[in-house]
Image (cartoon, rainbow, N blue to C red):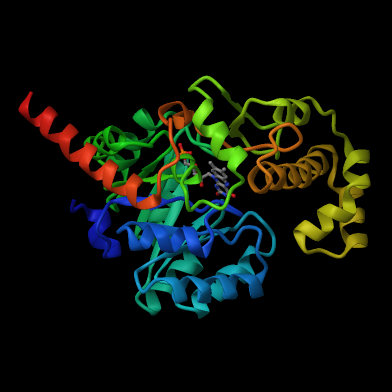
Length: 343
Ligand SMILES: Cc1cc2nc3c(=O)[nH]c(=O)nc-3n(C[C@H](O)[C@H](O)[C@H](O)COP(=O)(O)O)c2cc1C
């Protein structure tokens, strides 16, 4: 299947593994690359040294092109971006920040840059800043998807920009890929589907959750880590959403927040006192969310932790290998396109 995305990244299939912390590891990235897609290595919870080791490990496992992500909103991720540039990673995916300096450095060694966006304003800014492609994440997505559904957001953005678009949020099978292509995208990125594969390192309980839950079993809220996002409805997510946070709770958690943000504790504690109510509550949520995601993703514990989960969880009823997912999706998409073409 040839699209602008397969051509841009020199891959066989227009299917991308989203960058998910603790999940999109070198092993899963390599499995997707070997099956002909593009895997995005997640660096969100890694420091610079760990990021370099993960890039080396990915290169040991595959000779094929791969990507790595940086969430610019998280302090410390600038250092990770610098490592990825230094390592000349073929594709860098950035989100939640301004990536003009990344594009300039990556283009200098012949690499490509993909920006993840959820609004038309950010899509236009990323194109201006030199991105070669966009991942456009709609409301259906696990984690931090947009306010607007993929069905509406993807064609709106493909109309507005001239660079190719990868649709994310709600895509788990070949009908979804065919639909994304019809909407003007050049491919899909998937988180929930790849999280539930044999090679995915998440706990088996998390895979069971994604098999068992239906399309109505997720919630979209900003009361988990302070940013709007989608999670499985369960005791863990309900507990965090109901937590009342105030600057005092931020202060009490300041040691763990400081560690997460890579800042000296005293500086952070002073910052909390001076930064005002809203910002300090958001910092507390970020620290709590980080801890909860780790329990949800690594331990599969949705009673004490929180598992990001997309609405497409309702489209899944098994745990296949990455290669099976890829070949199934390509065959289904070709069938769907032929069916539509034949009327
Ligand atoms: C279990 C899980 C963990 C995720 N963790 C992250 C993360 O750490 N960083 C991030 O940017 N997105 C994360 N996401 C969101 C994905 O990157 C992607 O945007 C989303 O899954 C796409 O929508 P879909 O789930 O409908 O395929 C996660 C998704 C899942 C399912």
